[in-house]
Image (cartoon, rainbow, N blue to C red; front, side, top):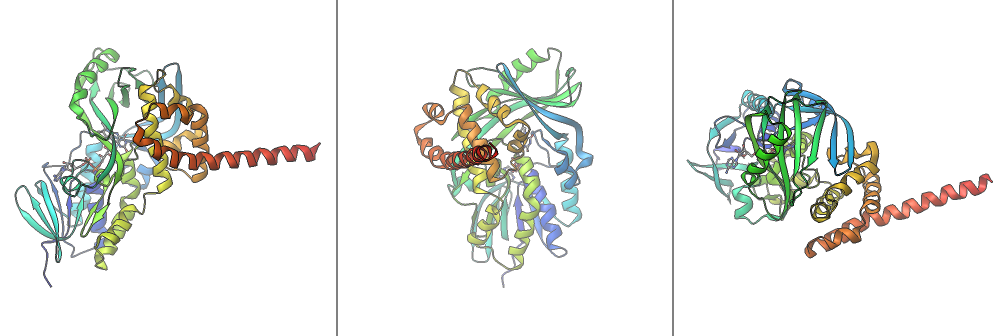
Length: 423
Ligand SMILES: Cc1cc2nc3c(=O)[nH]c(=O)nc-3n(C[C@H](O)[C@H](O)[C@H](O)COP(=O)(O)OP(=O)(O)OC[C@H]3O[C@@H](n4cnc5c(N)ncnc54)[C@H](O)[C@@H]3O)c2cc1C
């Protein structure tokens, strides 16, 4: 038998790569050979993360919490929506540092290098990097949306991107630091501002907009960020930059023979709400457990790996988030901008938080779809949508709304009959 250099090579030491590295090393136990490749010397991100107190506790990340909040505030024109939840703002680099230490303590090796190419060979995968080349039984690609393999194998079917630019700002006073804020700029592109407080005097502050079938360039937003943070907080200073992309969509394949995609390169960011770090948190343990099983059973073909990569991709949840992402056209181009979105959140009341958590049942989706339809009818949205997206919306949205209308009419009928019997 030919012996490969490594059992697993993980490309990318962002949250996806590190979370999988520490977990899969634990699953495989002593004797595994795992290598993580990243061009950065130590893991660092230019993203900012808020998450949920329950998820952070379940993942043992309490020491990485900078600040706790009680709600997300959405503002658009004359409307506001307060989405109540137990939220935490994280020190993202502390999370990465902790995960790297955990991975190293389980024997994972790290090298400062850049993945350039990979292809299947008879006994595994051949991996080419900027400085070297390796063989492994399995490559897990966690390099994000700019992955060279997504490009080489033409795997992106469609993509919807939130492009973000901002900074950690100090010398400010936030009136109510117990809330995370999403505020509209009401400009032509309908850019939004996100503010995650660290305290009353420090916050992550970034501007972001949505692009369809493009991944954009975060630095294009730099001038807008500079003017908007100055207008909100004239005396603010920038302590560190924040920028990046949150890309969601679909791949033509989530795995190839001896290669699998996880995190943003696996399109795990829900396109509607974009909470990609949170998805990694929710799914990395199951992913690592199943990958370890594939490795032990030597089932490393595209079919087996695809089953692992898509096992937590609930089609109904994805389709619903995709519908919300497509309604974005309406929010960008309609004269009332994001007002309809905030009106929809208000119609959901305290149940709205399930949307941002990307955690909901089919009956929730049906009710939320019906409320969306009642707030902003499909007939209006479709007028502002690129023709190629009609079919998707019609097929998936009507499925949820159609069922919800039937269920609602049955419920009304029952109530009505009960009323008649009571007379
Ligand atoms: C400003 C901002 C705010 C955000 N807010 C939130 C939030 O509040 N909550 C939330 O859940 N999500 C949030 N996100 C999204 C979240 O950051 C992403 O979903 C998450 O970072 C995706 O993780 P990843 O590891 O898949 O990819 P990435 O974070 O993109 O990491 C990819 C890693 O791969 C490395 N790499 C790249 N190319 C190569 C290569 N060729 N070879 C080797 N290594 C390579 C990179 O150096 C990097 O370390 C935010 C993002 C931004 C930018």
